[in-house]
Length: 341
Image (cartoon, rainbow, N blue to C red; front, side, top):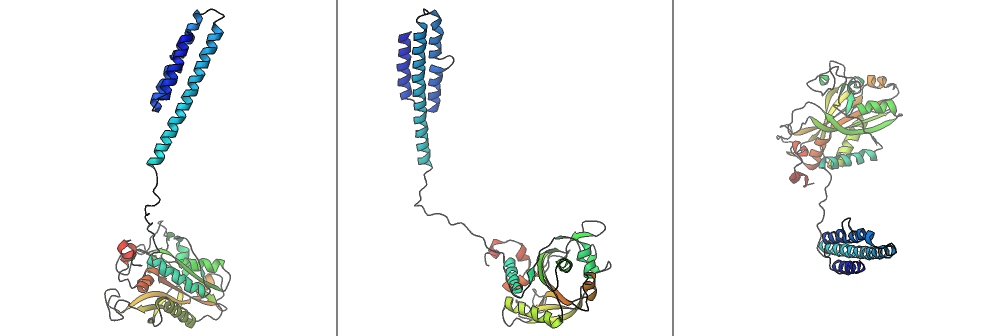
């Protein structure tokens, strides 16, 4: 039995020294140390030995087992190190190879125009407000002096969520003006940009989803001249000196008197073309002096305070800013178009 153990030891050491894979290592472990392995088989024969020999043979068998286990551990470590070395070689990174520069995006032309407009009005002392796109009809219409019979409240013009026509996708960012009057201390100077929704047919200058920038000033002694001067200054800063504008009388429930402001068509220079629908001018915004009743609904005394408000379409602003001839290009996400800015 002593000779058997010595033979097993020498044979195991020799084979473990030449092992080349984890699978081969596992086979040798099972062969020598498994439940049906050679060491186990030797130990089963100890019952036939004299009692005084058993401790000695048991100690010798354990020594052989320990030697084999140490050799297994050593062989496993060598295999792991070789595998790591091979992996590092396979995954080596050549730092001398030129890298690929990441393709960076840039701001959308519409938001370039918005940021420029924000800077202009912030420079005039205005505060920028943001608000919900799902709005109450009370704030979108009632508080803006647009009664139940107003055409803009019809289901053919507005996206409603309920049959009572009380919850809707806002058709303008004017509700932020109402919120400002309810929550801010006087005097007030704010602009409110954001997405709005109307059931418009898509064409070169219209979209059912578009962006507006509403503005409002409430102070003592505010006049229509302040309104025109502020808007002309903003347009001149955005589009450049010499930009031609015109103000036309109009009617908005929120304001009295009311007007619309046009800029000369950038495509035809006032001659007339498809972009301006042959008029030579493109409507930029609606504006006017805030109606006294609107001030009263907000708890503001119209005999002490006066104000003006305006609202313009951001897409049309960007069209004039970058001389884009079709509003639909802004929404199509054509990279060939966007990369020009």
